[in-house]
Length: 316
Image (cartoon, rainbow, N blue to C red; front, side, top):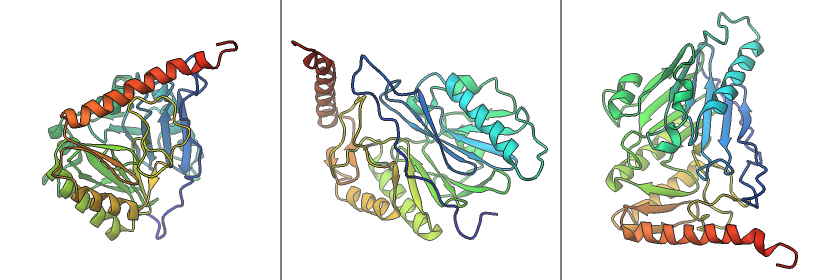
């Protein structure tokens, strides 16, 4: 059973955010941060992939859940996860019946986009590991969701119950995971401080309503997504493909921010294009109103990054 009061999370951390010069990359490939006992957040570096996704590992008494495998080859991620599992098992106050090679690991995904599943192959031959498929039928079947997306189903890690439910709108297979132990609600790419790409506006409207209602009903403390793309200036995002983001906000949002995102989207859901708000930027549809401005700004960012080191050379 989860504690009566959620375990506090250590969210005061400076995340790796890329290197100033593309010719002198200094970030480690991964940053591993223990938010709380059995709760680990991992970020892939912008020096490795501009997506720089966050990957969540939740550990229980009987098994662990890894949400996503990132945007690149998963070999280093697997090594990190193996070490974290071994550390978790060795830290248990009571002797555990599980050795690292027999403790179950479930590798699931917030949704099926490539920057969240690219590392799956590294876990395919891992002992005692289940890699959940990417299609909607596979997701529903594994978690036992018979009424998609309205049904909230339990998923037990061993003295650590989770709640799982569908949140389509960004992608048909998107899921949310709620961890009552910490008060954390993981929303994948559906809500995070960045560009929310909307695949199905009507589905996202319904999803945001359900997320807000769930968060308010369950006393959620933290809302976490998979990326950070905003700057610390309200309404201003980093360019698509940015490899250096020194002025990022925290990836953790509040329930009040989640409700504000819901309310904001209600005003633009029927308008294809790019719509800026304090905490998020909605990209509704995939037509030229969205793609042309994003790609043009991304091109300018690449040119600026390449010219930057040249401008700083002595005598340049």
